[in-house]
Image (tube, rainbow, N blue to C red):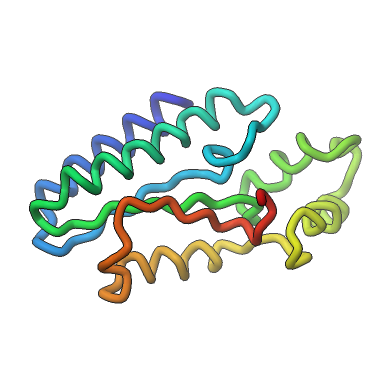
Length: 149
């Protein structure tokens, strides 16, 4: 997990830099677990996402000569393929809950009272990739509906 999450993104970003024009964008994928105070049973995964956050800050400086911005999004509580299995780990008795029951429980983690959807991530990535995001650099943007505040 650590090797895939860190080396994969590092080498892709390094190669992207070589081929991007001036003013290009590199957007990495973090996780809210890299920012959270601590997530049980996620030491390696969380550590790999913490490494991504450090990559972002250092690469933002290293890529400045071409005015390439480097940022990451750090999703949390997004309804993806791994969502139900991961949520069950955090819910007492979660292994006995249906997917709908997991959704009902998980939405209480955010003051917005819902779980995130992939489109919530896509909108932020589109902003970072756009000209409107050209002054955002070296940042990791948590996208979790304030669940990890």
